[in-house]
Image (cartoon, rainbow, N blue to C red; front, side, top):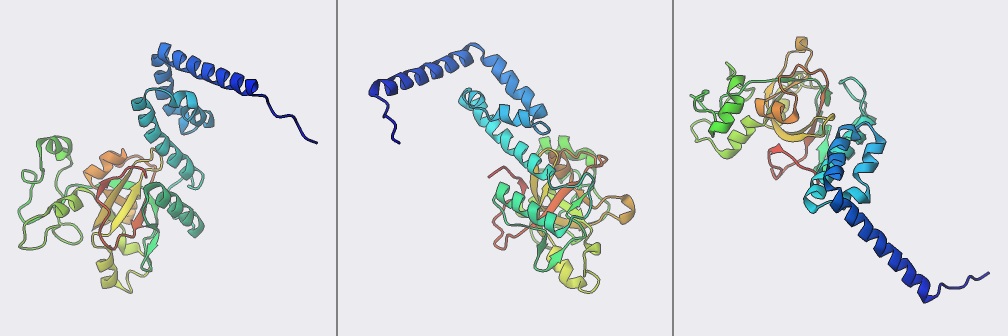
Length: 289
């Protein structure tokens, strides 16, 4: 059975109503712009735990706000979706994950940040990939480095001086090569370092030197699964001790960016290796792909 085709005046009427609807929406947003922006900002607070919040943020009406607001909310959307994705695969408490869960998280993080993220690399893995993080101190980058020489600018000194300098060196000594001037890479490694329990890695005692060489300044991605913030770091030290109840530690800069602050918060972070053989992934906070 065939149906009659719409006549041209039907198409004209449809286009007329569509344009009228668009004009109405634009006028509505111009007249009530402040209210819609308040709605966007308020919705961020409930979006992580509310499906309705996600629909509101991504609705065409909200996205028709001015380009600056829409662009900002698009960035927020991605962190919200990452938090939502991770909430479906992570247990309530930090601890070792099954291989199946780790593969799911590898896929989520690799896709989100456009990186090759791995729980196991070159046949080596840590004792866990989801653990509680504690606050670490600054580490000496070169002989004679102290709190007076450590910071590149006054802003950093004001922000991170209170963390103090560790009395000993990192697990691999100074960050700068002996007898050489410190490079930007050396400074960035100390600024964005974590301490991990290398000594608890499966097979460590049987292949101690191999594992130490592998872990030295190895790049990792650390993610706060509760706010979506992520940072690229290196392994700069070993620890913490098992009796602390923590599985890793973060430099003052890492802790502040992840909003883990002094480490007393009990929820965990994810930390996975980054497969970066050509040293192309920069250290520091990372945005969304």
